[in-house]
Amino acid sequence: MEVRVALDTNRLTDLFQGDMALADLLGTCEEVWVPLIVLGEMKAGFYGGSQQHRNEALLQAFLAKPTVGILFPGRETAESYARLFVQLKRAGTPIPDNDLWIAAQVLEHDLQLITRDPHFEHLPQLVRG
Image: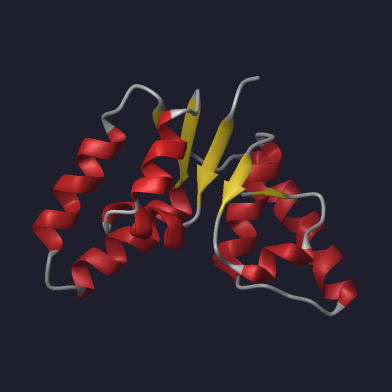
């Protein structure tokens, strides 16, 4: 069975902090995607932190792996975002905008989202790990 995942910012941070169980899991995946929004959040953390060069080197090494890619939003992402936004608004369970964009990309590409954020549970159609 092909395993295709996307990483949320908190899990990518965990990976860079030495989460070996996560590293082992990602090593079994055929595809590992980093949504552009996650990349932006990571870079913002790097610029605001004290280990910018170390973290940038870790990110570049991770992105250089043959099974890892950056997931770019497109027109369908905007459609998915809009549908999710309305779904959550009607349910009274909004989530942060960046996470909504991440969810839209993950659903668009039929991926499993590796995250620790519980608010993604408000999207039952989203497969989480």
